[in-house]
Amino acid sequence: MKYDDEKAKLANRRQYLLAQIHYEREDLAQKGAALRVATQIIDKIRNGIHHVTRHPETLLLPLVLTLITRPRRLWTWGISGLGAWRMLQTWRQRIFS
Image 1 (spheres, rainbow, N blue to C red):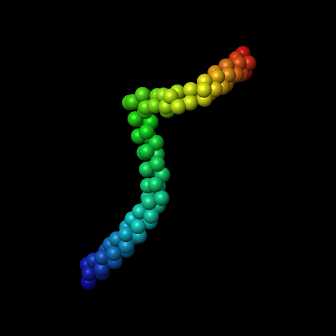
Image 2: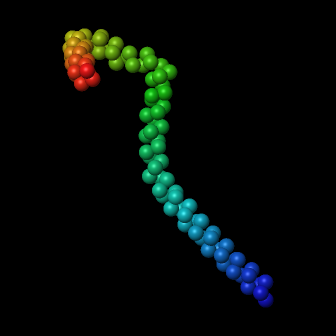
Image 3: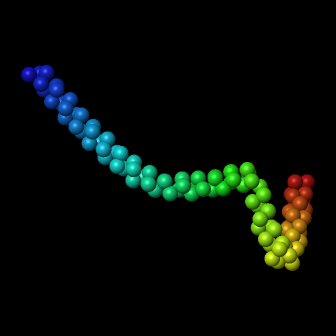
């Protein structure tokens, strides 16, 4: 009799634990679905960075297209970029000296 009671308790405990496992797996799957979208975006960004580091010439394509289609705009951006760089250098010298 005592053995049968222990066996029944263990069977009940097993059923309870299996139900809890099922519930936790469903909960984890729902929470994981929300994270799946974020990880896919992060993976795309990482893959893009990896591609650019392996093929830096891809960064030249927009520059070449701009040079061909609008050379004046490229000069304008270049001059503005140079001015911004010089201003940044001046600020860095003033701040760190």
